[in-house]
Length: 471
Image 1 (cartoon, helix red, strand yellow):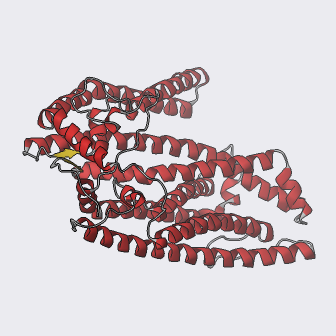
Image 2 (tube, rainbow, N blue to C red; image 1 turned 60 degrees about the vertical axis):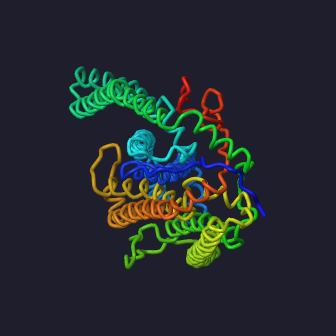
Image 3 (cartoon, rainbow, N blue to C red; image 1 turned 30 degrees about the horizontal axis):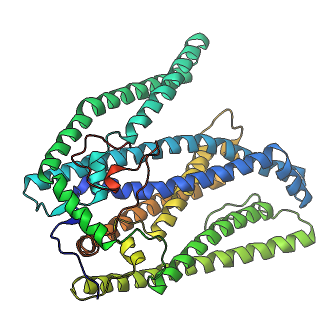
């Protein structure tokens, strides 16, 4: 039987309140979305190379589409890639800002939650868990660096655009320059607020928290955790077999679905270049292809359509299998942690519940949403707004107007589902995490900061220390 060292001090995860919870789960949703944006950038970059080097036109012409149809397809791809770059830049900035803002809000919310707990007389034996201590003792905030970058870039653009607009009489340039100037001013005000209000308040709350949970309290909780010797374990070795199988099925299915969708859309463009691409839309005249090529395109379209249906079903099955495994694992842990004579669960299982986690399927949805929030708005703009540098775009993309709206709406829905799913899972597992932290605490990973220094809160007491971690 496993034995627990005699000690009443233990780690505890304190609730963060509404703002902190939203910020925590928003970051876990936005990070995989950023991965989706990166994947979209890779696709746009590859398409741009194919069009600029003439490889796409040559391939389409060799398939028997003729010069006129090949040129139309190449023009559509070229305009999509150029507009995608603009949308990607905007989305990358917004998502980066939101991630940094979420990190800052979570940091402030954590210090407020611990300060409130101290004021309300929280037990000194229930020492805040190392991840929460790290949020309190970390001095700098990523949002500060992001705002400094904004001041430099937006300020430079403002000066350049306003200067050109004054000389050339460019009205649109003046409006964009003034907008960049306003953004620069807002960033400067944000920096002043962080340095004059937020950081001093953080330091004051840290002193209040350290006065309640002394270094001796922290050391006692750390001593208990070190005595158990539970090092952080990665991977799913030793966990419920259904979790390992279901996670792999979902991951493979997501990758295959993305590839199949891209190839199906490419074949549709080849076989039906004038199609209305939405449910019930007209297929339009079929391109004149060579017989062998036409048969291959037809088989490919049916094959990839069937593959998409199969992998979506597989992803759903994988998610259900994983969910069943997680439910059984949580039930087992609840029973085990309540039994004083129970054997210690495997380290990988304890590590999985030692901190908040991300849901695999929710991450997939967020990444797909990132791709959709590039493609949808791009086609909406090109099919609706007359822009002189995108000649005849409204005519060329008119058939994609409503599909673009549906793609955008679906991406927003997937992002919302991913956020809610992640939040619900972390809230539901909060009680279990605290039970496990008290009975079988897992030592945190001693990760290093940007300067290569080990974060103090991950190796021992840190609340009362003079030094602070970097962001």
